[in-house]
Image 1 (cartoon, rainbow, N blue to C red):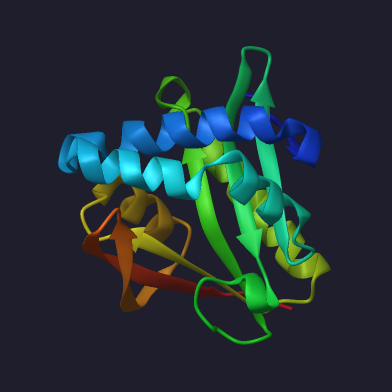
Image 2 (image 1 turned 120 degrees about the vertical axis):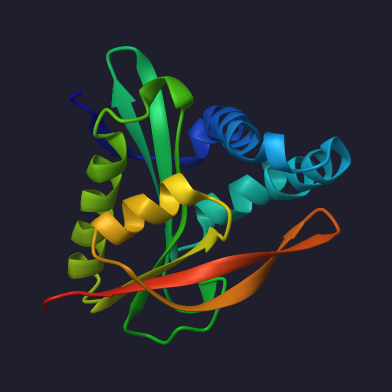
Length: 173
């Protein structure tokens, strides 16, 4: 499926909030309590927090849009915006979410291609991300993209600590 990848602006915060909450819920609701899920959605995707993230010069957001509408989105971080200190040569893929109706249509690959382009433009030689240990579909996607598991960290789902695997990929500069 053909997707246009465009940068998200502060004026798009409501659309970003809608897709963020929808895709996070689709991905994790079957395996988490409603209380933990709701607490996370309120904390992570409230309007002020998303606006602050959009205004951060070290974070970059992109929508994947098709003729049917917004199919997914991507959040990238460099420098101090990274959720872990991975150094100045690294770019983090903090969020890459696709609406379920658009799974397996090339949207994820299009967003990853954008991540590689941003990494090159920002002169980064490594991309990294955290992925929930039980998200087999995402892990398979990242492995297919050439990422390798290098560690793990804790992700808080409400007040429930969960394990995210760290995956990294070295880029040709």
